[in-house]
Length: 437
Ligand code: ATP
Ligand code: MG
Image 1 (cartoon, rainbow, N blue to C red):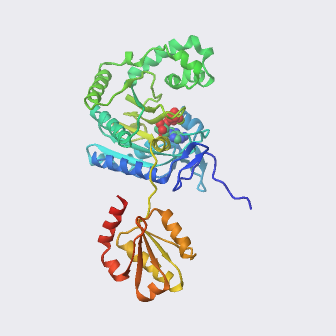
Image 2: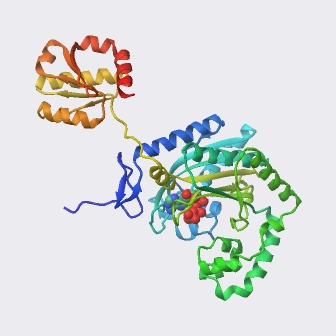
Image 3: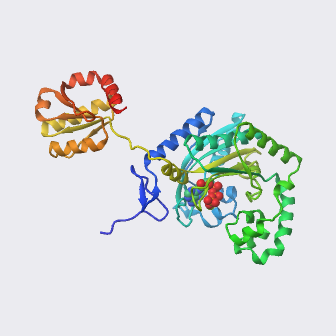
């Protein structure tokens, strides 16, 4: 029978990394766990709390929350009608669900500021490429309830902390302000005036956006369009006094924290609820899919989803792109067990199964050989496992309640009663650690 393959744009994350030729395709699980652990730790120390929302939601949430004119909603959503005739969509991003939960559970009624973070799979129907998948993963942060520029700076600092702690290099942090609604409507007019004479030379999508969502044209990946927008007016020249003050404070505080940035006035988000700060962190080591982190302020979103007017700021990091960078940076060691346990013979095997369980309950990582093959073959596997110590149980040991201890680092071998072994696990663990050092 033909085996069934995974769908295009989805990846298995295996204990060992997968390569296509020389190129890394998916990092190993160890890399993923390291990223998750570092993010969790950094969020924890800044008093951010994790939130988990469903992987599918009502389609209308994303239509309203992301905007129907965007590629994500217009072209990339995985939508289906369920058996109850509801229109459902696999979440293409995390913010809409978080904001829905914030409103639904009246988190605003707890007063003050909500600092939230999340991680999980997201789904977009895109052309699969390196760093671009149909199921991908994000970690994200959202701060709800503060207009203070320090909130913008705090979330940005968390993103740069995570990337720095991971040891990533060659990153550039691009920053812009899209002002408020009225700044943007004045800018929109100037932009349309500038672009209209070039309408015929724009790519088809951009021409279409000229009337519907002209700011998004600045985001076009078409080279011709990019050449035209190069000389377009800058939104930074259209900021009113309040927007300018907010932005200046963000810049000053970022500098005070030693976070380097480059202004990029073409970095925009086309939707009305995006306000003020917009940013992206790019890596020069990723080729075409260069953006690792994108975010900004979205003061209008909570209200547009039916909640009380609530300012907010956040970002999302794409984990596939991050793990590709990490794997290129350093080889992570696969986790090795403390002990490899070999046994042969009916009585010995039953005894070893029990011994493994008891050792694990005492905190040791034990890999039990299940092959029943000759001792010589089991020893070879013990060597390959990376364990420091091999325990050997044959039928004689099982009868006598003893075990052979073989240090794989030095070859030294002794015999011990199983009772003594189990009562001196702390000693053993210390010996394992020093054998490894
Ligand atoms: P891009 O311009 O690369 O399509 P985007 O603007 O659609 O990115 P956001 O919606 O801002 O991306 O998502 C934040 C981050 O999530 C991106 O910077 C990227 O790292 C990651 N990301 C987005 N789409 C994908 C995807 N299809 N596969 C892998 N990672 C993705
Ligand atoms: Mg995209």
